[in-house]
Structures are given as structure tokens and as C-alpha cells.
Length: 188
Image: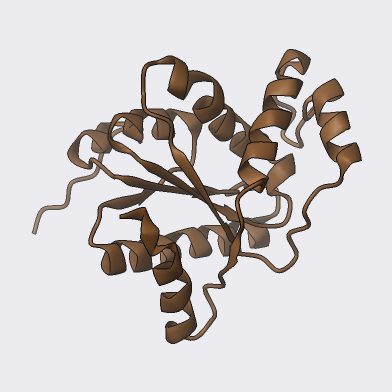
């Protein structure tokens, strides 16, 4: 049996025209947290695809999201502890907020799922700091997000958090997982 293995993450995107994109924090900074978050993303993707009979895929970066963008209608964000401080997630969300609609694409409908009971909704001070300083330096020593993007990031986060988040846990019973995914079933 021959398996297709793409040379690059975007090479395989041509074969899949996902209508539902699923994202969240998948940072490597805290290995346990990233493994848990990745498991939640993958479990949610499998259940959503099975229940809705629509192509779903997990996107882990802004470039992946933009490659799927022409076919997508929904962006499901699994909220977890630390996601709002993750520069990779911020870049992914900003790509939707800034580039997606300006490129003539239809707006993606945001759907949020609380995949981590430790996720804390931010206060007004968080948004003010975000507007003034963006996210600053990340743990990996990469370039920080430009401060000029702070107001856009704050606006993107506010739009994201205005959507009611349903609870979800990859360790829940099958019936509770199916119920959460089916409640999100208006994505079809």
C-alpha cells in the first residue's frame, strides 16, 4: 500500500476543500499543554466530520488557514489556557481578520468551543494592553508581533470572544462529545 506524504504542509491542501476549519493553540512551549490541545483539535475534527458529513480539517498556522480559505465557511476555535498569549494563534486569527476579507473572500463565521476548563476570559485591562503593546516577545525569541497590530488583534479577539463557547473535552464520554459537536451542528 502506498501512502501520500506531502513535502510541505501546503502541498496536501490542494486535495482537500474543507468547509469547516478547526484551530486552537498548538504551541510547543509547554509540551503537555500542546499535546492536550492537539488531541482536542483532532478529536473534535473527527467527530464534527462524522456527524456533519462535511469536510473538516485542523489548521495549525496562518499559511494553512489561508490555503483552505477559498472553500471554508466556518472557523471553529477551541479555546484553551494560554491561547490568547500564543503568537502563532494570534497570527492565524489576524490572517482571517486582516487578509481574508480584504482578499475578496466571504467572511468566515467564527464558532468557539471551550476545550479547557482552565481557559479564562480576559478582562478589559488585557484588551487595553493588547492594543498598546500587541503580544510583545514570545518565548521562542522570535520577532514580536508589531505593536501597530495591537488594535487589530484586540478587535479580532473581541469578535472571537463575543461568540458563546460550548464546553468540550476529549476525555468526555462519547455521548457528551457527540452532544457538543451536534450542538455545533448548525455549521452545515
